[in-house]
Length: 187
Image (cartoon, rainbow, N blue to C red):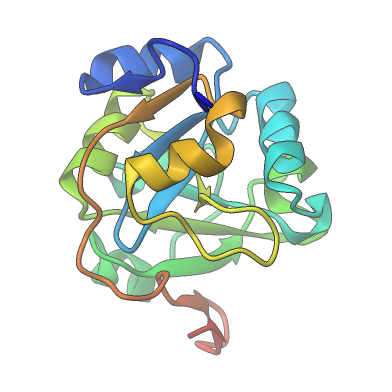
């Protein structure tokens, strides 16, 4: 049985970015697995992604960016320790921009942000306008997909595109730290 629609697999980040900007949900490689993404400014797309992933909206999502400047619409401030760790596999909880949709930040005053060093993910973010949602490509209580084939088997019917590529070298998802306290939220 075929699990994806024709044309879902893409090798051209510009095509995938156009799909994101049009409200689509995409899969793409990041540091430790494949991620699911959409435009963080498109509330309907974010809600659709949460439903597909079966993720409670209260948890919030990560905003992945190509550079720190691209995070201005999402974060009220970027502390020096966050800036010093980027680009790289470091996600920080920072004070959210008050205008940021609750569909992205969940039931929190903070938002999780990262400036990635993964070249393909950074290029996709740049082509999407600087940032996109990044959450592991899995449903609740499943392990994240580590190849585009695995992603398509599990979630292909709900995706508008999958950027074919290689994940980074991390064995586990990026750590998340609270920027105010330095506390490790996710190891």
